[in-house]
Image (tube, rainbow, N blue to C red; front, side, top):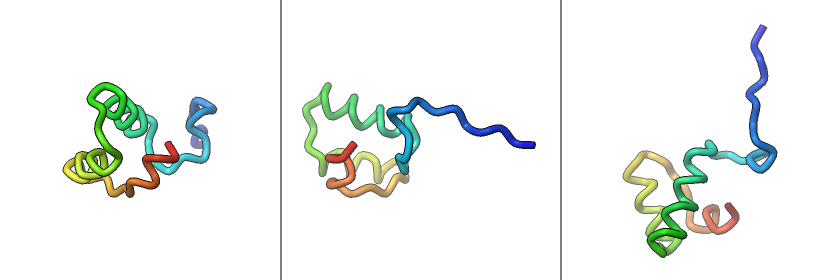
Length: 57
């Protein structure tokens, strides 16, 4: 029998892993990057995301 994944309530119903969300938030706040800059940086890491999705994170 498989066990359910334990998630922090803040990450419920999110498509991306918590590490990806935290990384985007950290970069956005620390380096004052635009949402489109974050999209390019995530694409380099193989994560496809649009700037409007990051806005909602």
